[in-house]
Each structure stands twice: as structure tokens, then as C-alpha cells.
Amino acid sequence: MGRTSTARERLLEATCELLGTRGYSAVGVAEICARADVRKGSFYHFFDSKQALTLAAVDSHWTTQRTHWNHVLSAADTPPLARLRRLLDDQAEAQRRAKRETDAVHGCLFGNLALELSNQEWVVQSRLAEIFDEQIAMVQLVLAEAAAEGAVAADRAGRVTARAVLAQLEGIVMLAKLGNNPAVLDDLWATVRLLIGC
Amino acid sequence: MGRTSTARERLLEATCELLGTRGYSAVGVAEICARADVRKGSFYHFFDSKQALTLAAVDSHWTTQRTHWNHVLSAADTPPLARLRRLLDDQAEAQRRAKRETDAVHGCLFGNLALELSNQEWVVQSRLAEIFDEQIAMVQLVLAEAAAEGAVAADRAGRVTARAVLAQLEGIVMLAKLGNNPAVLDDLWATVRLLIGC
Image (tube, rainbow over all chains, first blue to last red; front, side, top):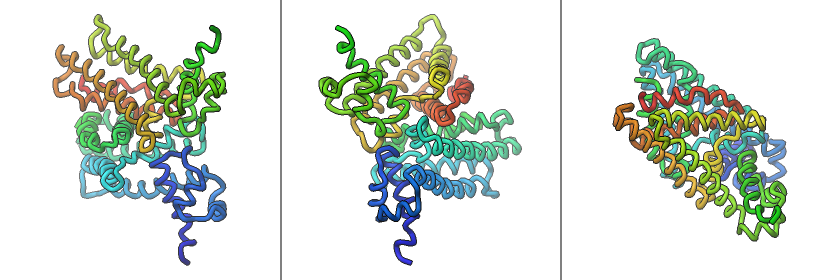
């Protein structure tokens, strides 16, 4: 089948990469096609618009990430809070790896798009909101397991706490990206422990 | 003097507004000039480029905000933690007001730019990093006052805690902006109390 058969995947990969390093408005279809080594005519065979491609790239990124989150958060032989810590450690490590390999902390694709696009691209925004809701629900579930084992108090195992954990992750990743310095992520777990009281 | 004398200020105001609602890359000099009712020729009398204008708009916004932060955080007749709470309540109220008046949560100008521009506009990025550092230092100072009065433990009054407070604010404002829903800010102070242990 050769390269043509992977054109759609290459477009999605190039989009995730360019959205991470340059943002939505700064990147055009021509640049995405060039990076993906796909002709513009082929692009419109797969996607109607940059918005449609962005939605597909967001979905593709979340499908991969959700599989990883589910794997880590449901590891049956590990206590719930150790799973949550592993998840947060993995997020921090992803930023450190980007810094090592590309010399740039890329941040969170969803957070980057959330702040650039809110108020103007409602379709993408609404998909991002669903993804964050899903992430909060996943954290809430593992907190509920921890509460059932007595590892955290029941009043720290609800949606407000889970949302605060996600907000802390996004806020610290923002500072890491801005300073291009993943070291600020070193204290993430210690900070999250304060939020959940363990 | 008429409108011409305020052209620079109008450009800065229009820039803050358009950066908040549409982002950096999506907005051009022509649109900023139209919004500010300033001719393009006059624009280049004041600013060399969109980047220079953005830097000036960021500085202008921070100058105003810093005055407010200093006023609130140094209120001598108010206990330190009550000052910090007042500051955070004010940030939440600003997002609620934007929602009431414009039907859109605008988020934090600095956070929005931080995630859109990191990795590409180093001059703006470095100014934003300085501003966040200054904000963290201001929060750290009021936490140190609280620790001196015994209102918080000394090990919760350092830079790591102050940074976590800022990260929580930015992360929650991101979720408020994304969902166009300022209600998620209602729990901000309760969450920050967990971080500082009071």
C-alpha cells in the first residue's frame, strides 16, 4: 500500500505536533500537509477543514492517552493512590522527555487548545470540555476507591477534589511550558497529596 | 487634544480585548486598528510590530493588575489569609463579571498567551514568565506574614506552596473559560485552603 495508505495518520500526527509547538491559528493546512508529506488534494479527501482535522487529532490523541490512563488507573495489584501518583508522574515524565528530545516543554495539547480557542471554535471547545470531564471522572473514580479503603477521607473523594487535581496538573504544566522548565513538575505529587489529604 | 491623543491607549485596550477573546495568532494589526479606531499609519507611529504592541499590552495589563494585587495583599488592617482570600475572590469575580457582561469567560490574559505562544514568541514568553514569578512572590510574601502570625505552618509558606496556589488559580480559570462557566471558581478558596493548610 505504501505511504498513501498512512496519509490520514501522518496528517493526524503532524497536526498534534504542530498544534503543540505553534498553536491552532498560526498553523495552516499547507504547513500541515508539508509536514505530513501529503498533497493538499489528498488532505481534502480525508478532512473538510482545519477544524475537522483538529477535532480528529484531538480525538486520536485522547484515544491513545485514555488507553494509558485506564491502564494505569485500573492496575488491580496497586493501591488506588499509588495508581494516581503513577499517572501524575507519567504526565510529568512526558514533559521532561519532550524537553530532553526537542528542547521544548510542549504542555498539554488539550490545555493549549482550550486557552487558545475558547470563545471562537465552539465545536472543538465542546469536545475538549468532554475530555476534561472524562479525565476528572477517571480521577474521581480512583479517589473513590481510595476512600473505600480508608486511604482518603470521603469528603476528599468527590468531583470538586478530582477537578482540583486536574486543575493543579494543568496549571503546573502551564508554568513548565512557559518557563520551558519541567523541574516545576517535581513537586506535583506532594502538592496533590495536600489536595486529597493523604 | 481629541481622540488622537488617546490612540495609544485605545490600541492597548483593543489588544487586551482581542487577545482575550480571539488569541494572538488569529488577530492582525488591521483588526486591532479597526477596533481601536486608529489608522494603520498611526499604529506604526506607536509600535514596530504586533509583538511590540502585545508586549506593551501585557505590561499595561499587569501594571493595572499589580496595583490592585498590592492594594489587596498589603491591607494592613486585614489578616494575611483574609487578604489572600480577597485576592482570589476578586479573580473569580472578574470572570463572573465578564460572563455577565459579555456572555463569555475571558480567562487570564497571561495564561492564554502563555499556552498559545510558548515555543515561538520568546520575548513575550519571557515577559509572561517574569509576571508569573512576580505574582508567585507576592503570594509567598502574604503566606510568610500568615506564618509569622502562626496562621499557617512555616513549611506551607514557601515558594512551592505559592506556586501551587497560582497554578490552581490558572488551572481552574482554564476550566471556567473552556466551559464558559464561572461556577467552577466557587470552590477556589476552599481548595487553596487545602494547599496552604488553614
